[in-house]
Image (cartoon, rainbow, N blue to C red; front, side):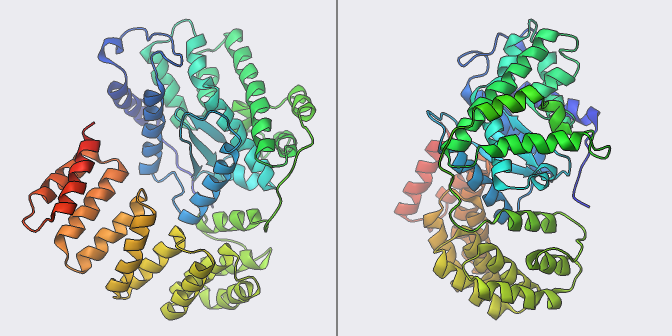
Length: 457
């Protein structure tokens, strides 16, 4: 069974109260908030702070899929869509929610979550991309915040209820939290406003899809899948349909907006492999059925790594540039404690994908865990230069320095990790401690002071 967590409403309200007390000015704590616009109560910085706060909360609860291979797939898909977005003023972060309901949502600040259940319900990459494009449009058009602006009485209590709805899962989309959370119950104008938003998001979403050379028909196809699923008694309560209702008019309008455009289908179709690995990473067991890749993953899940090995080896040898095959094969070799062969596969993959962060990190960990610290360090230093904003690199780098008994370098890597992870106070404390080290050189001291200036802005 796929992972799914329930959160108590009492905890949600307590969390929302504490979170809002940190982001809403004291003067508005018990008063009506001013209207929300591009330059009003919630500016872009505050909008990002809201989204990031909820993202970190979900992450702390184990509700976000952190497997680097899966995370990169969904963010690469998002980056391709964003390439068609003009005048982008915010960064976007896409993440997979470890929940088997069919749902997706957009948080303020560009944080977009896609539930596992929705990903598995999509039959093509274009269909999944259509949902992501729609959610990007909600963020770009500031629909969640505009709903609050539309309301005649936006109070801090309204915001509390809104944010509670976001986390509750029953109405994860910002607009849905208002429409279904009882805040705007009986206000037909608000309901009509959200319908308008859905049409607006569809229009921009189709533009993004076709601009990024996806098949725009993916949006129409996904609407049709949801329409059929809603008639199934087992799938009748689909959260995504509550927050994004599908009507025949909406489907017709989406179809009318499709234009002849280039569709980029170059390269292998890895979407089925992504889905197979997603199920593998988030389920207790898998039936040994389907394609060979899925069968091998199912065998690993059953503890039959020996049986999975020849299947994955054959797949890799037949298609050595397939990232998914190589990664799963080397991973299984590690399970079998065949570390020499695993290292060989990782290095072969790095020949094809030089300094790929996922493979390089995996190889670095393998070398570290088998006592080859200096070889692990050489990879870590190369990654440090190539990926200076990847906190995972500095986490491993600090551990390697610890194993090599290099105290000052370990502390520097720890400080860099906490800076990138958002632990500002701890990072500042460590940087100040580093400045007091007797063996610090001038170049290191200069870099540390620059980072302290940046953190204290």
